[in-house]
Length: 229
Image (cartoon, rainbow, N blue to C red; front, side):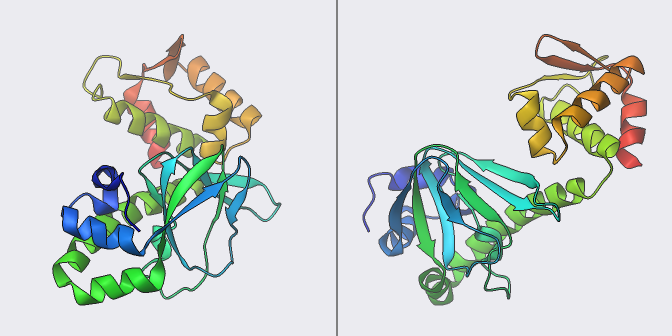
């Protein structure tokens, strides 16, 4: 399949180091698929047949806990991949669910054909493996966060955000909330009410303060301790 968007696939983390000719090899074996808003792309436990690149729209990747509660793992925007974590595992089944948040177009990359490309081109395989390792490390950190306590989870999130905002060395490190708190709670796998109570407690203990959509850390030492508990 020939895609006019081939040059944009360089923005996809696992394809970022590929040459134009290598990107074309990928698009030639891939198929474009369209999903309506709220349409399920795959469910946990279904047979893994390949991974996906979002071309337009947005997809959420999630798991269900023992009570059937949705735990959001990721919201995937255009030119980001999902389901690639199963690619080199011994599993033949999806370890999460995926659903279109809005009308979406994705590029489906079939597992067998992609594996054949890698077996035929060592340099290609090395570049993909290196990039995939970075992606899997990020996913492992997210899963580890979900296994921690609520206070620890929120503290780790706050620390990570001020670090990403390059404000950690300021007297009051800060960052701007880019999503609604309800969505953020879902992202952290916390009930919205519990998340609100946790933020309120941190404010009362003067660990953080909030001005409009900006979150300031007023006691970095205590926040770090909470993140390590």
